[in-house]
Image (cartoon, rainbow, N blue to C red; front, top):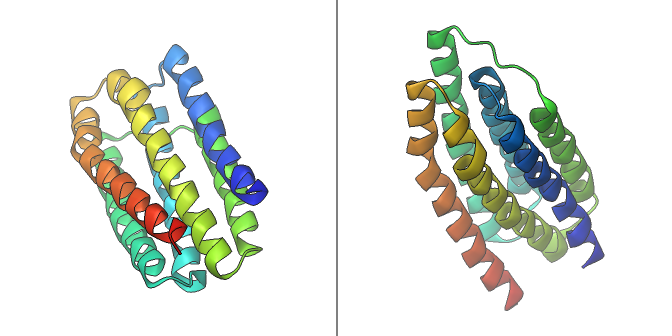
Length: 175
């Protein structure tokens, strides 16, 4: 339980920074950086879970995370290139990167069912935090309509990921 709490703490840092970002209203360049970083964090965790997970469901979920979040990053990168916007590093994107790196280090020290459970627990919390940030900060703060449209377009995928992760979490808890 202690390990799960430690893993989840990095996600809460993201949520805290998202709340702060809401007050500071990030600009489009900062939103672009947050989006790319948030997706990369999940891609990195997914790649680790693909190789280290023990459950077939966890491995399949991780593969889906890598595929889906890579697709979102490609769309975001294409859009910022088209708009001639350079993603701007900011406290939220820095916190995401740092939290993601800490999560990876913690996950690397786990094996088997303990790894699977920690990975999925983090995915549930992470996706909920990202959805909350999208709803409360990123979508309302986006000034460019194409950027806002991209965020709105990808939101249902994040909700589906959260639902899928919750289902796996319930399945793992029964084992």
